[in-house]
Amino acid sequence: MMRERLTQEDVKKIQEEIEYRKLVVRKEALEAVKEARAHGDLSENFEYHAAKKDKNKNESRIRYLERMLKTARIITDDSQDDEVGLDNRVEVYFEEEDETEVYKLVTSIRGNSLDGRISVESPLGKALLGHKVGDRVHVKVNESVGYDVIVKNIDKNTDEEEAIRSF
Image 1 (cartoon, rainbow, N blue to C red):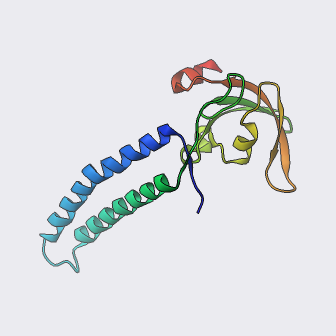
Image 2: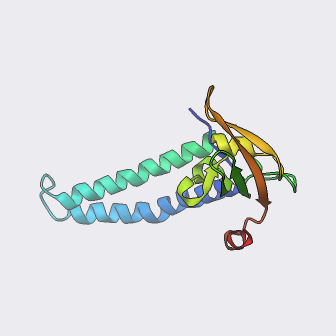
Image 3: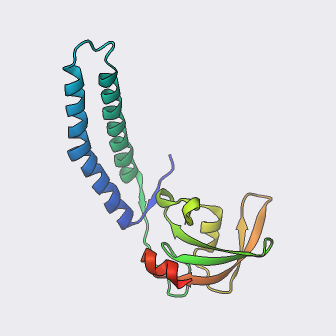
């Protein structure tokens, strides 16, 4: 089983979700099941089956998150002032395409390339960590494929709004 790499902030968010699901969602789901059950014949009671399904989905999400916390490796988001680190925005120049992209490096549970967030577990994220502005970095996709990028800018500001304006 792959151990997720989580920061303290990730752990806090996951614990908050677990608590919310146990205290709020679980209660609502149980009420919905009870209410649907009261409507009579369960074999043809669509409402009842939907309510049971929602309840089970919530319970399995709770188990999934608890398991993730139990097996996670806690990592620090500290990095040198001039180095690419976790939660930094990085402006990267792709030589072959002659294009510049901006990414925010995040832990794997927060990665979403459509949103400009890439996981530190991804080939690009892994390659960029610890590098400085001006560094040419080789990104290894697999044994035989790779490409080079140049670190153009590092934004240590973790405030989303500020970071967007700074580039």
